[in-house]
Image 1 (cartoon, rainbow, N blue to C red):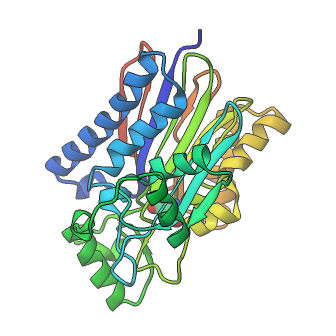
Image 2: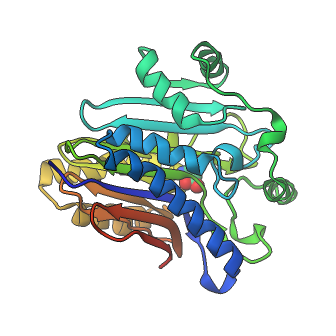
Length: 313
Ligand code: ASP
């Protein structure tokens, strides 16, 4: 039997302690804790890493603080277009959706794509048609209306910019933060899984899709190596094929998880201006939570160890 382990993130960026109110900090921490506990309760009961990942991400999607599900940012047209992906390290099966609207839990729809279709990635109207077929839960526009997100859209429109969640000039406290949520888990059978879910960028246009929907870029899991979920500037993470690159460095160069993460997050991404971070877990239960931004909402828990929650550097 393998000791289980789980890690989650709620986005990376310029998250400064000096700008955070104690109430907000508490709210973020309790949101992170709830999500870890949801995943852990499955792992503790002998459940699969894959189920744990879905369950932790559902918690984060239902929390308006995070840019995914209920808290998803607004597009240029005042809509919410969400991306998500999930992967099973045991058999390299994966499912993903991009640009879907009104879906309560995009991560569960990504899972349905994997389990109930012959495809890996479905987008837009087609994905929503599929969602109806598999009885996914839909919500109305009001469910996704969050005042702060609406104000962010107005500011982004004024400056005619497309921005990642809470870019510097967009919050009165000067906080710059990437949204997106993710989870990686290892179960007692030694199986790894990873998942990622996001609203993407505020004021995005033209059906823009980020790395969170792309297997190998924002999400990857392979029992031979590791499980990865990313958050950051999606365009740069796609160009760097971040999640798969870490797995490759482990598989082909025999690097440790820590060494592979350092190369990709602290060197390769930095060199092309790819701000953000990721959560990573290997088959031995090692957890690495690297980021090259000021902060990253993150939490992890290993069997028989204390819960870790971090926000700042
Ligand atoms: N990576 C996500 C995207 O580009 C955003 C984020 O992580 O905040 O859509």
